[in-house]
Amino acid sequence: MNCLTSGKHVNKLTHVNLLAHPFAGADEAMAPKKKIARELAPREEQIMQVVFRLQKASVADVREHLSDPPSYSAVRTMLGQLERKGYVQRDRTEIAHIYRPVQSRKTAGLSALRRLIDTFFPRSPVDALAALIDESATQLSDDDIDRLEQAIRRARKGE
Image 1: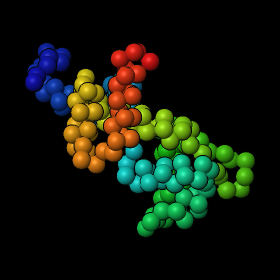
Image 2: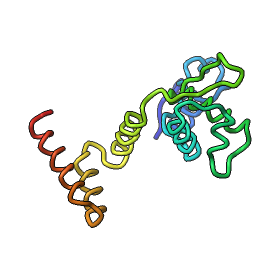
Image 3: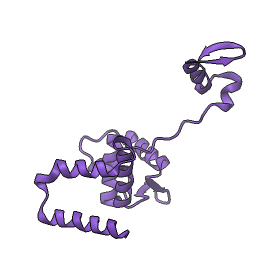
């Protein structure tokens, strides 16, 4: 795609990349800010599982509960990233900083599930639910099916 800039045709992709480049000159101030990713990397998910399980944890606590833990500084860096993303909060009152989950495991799980559904089943959570049920139908107990039926009844009533 081309666009017109100063009377010249410029490749739009190149133009956008120049605007986003940190050394783009006068356009630098207008460059879009890079958003911090809210999704978790696999190691961040493992760290969050430890923090949820312990409810409060230092960097050393997290390392102790990880299989094949990365270095102390790597865990500290990842906890800092989780803090910037809004998943943990840091208590700096003690010598060792203590990290706590910001949301309950259930709330964080629902948020992750919504992002997953939005990514793979946009505008159709029903398709996501149907796929999960179809995939696990042979493993569902009678109690599981009763629970699903209750959820459907609540949805019909608008609860």
